[in-house]
Image (cartoon, rainbow, N blue to C red; front, side, top):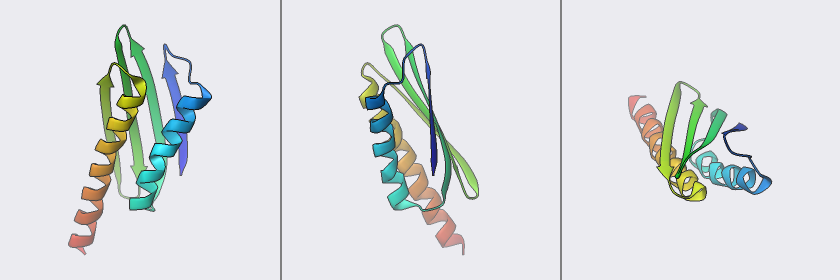
Length: 96
């Protein structure tokens, strides 16, 4: 799994990188075929936005979240992606 992190109007610090990579291990636990992850962290005035596009075998998933704290936005975004991955995995298994 390759994770790329970019920032718009924010410096991506080592702690932010570590937090994002730590959270994406949760996705890796549920589904092994995660190919590529692209995370964009954005700051706009008082809003902190985290969005991610996840390329898995057979689909491309997207989630974003806006909060006042960047770490909370990352947590919520990963939770949304986790639900999407579990749903995709169940749908794929039921189809077979």
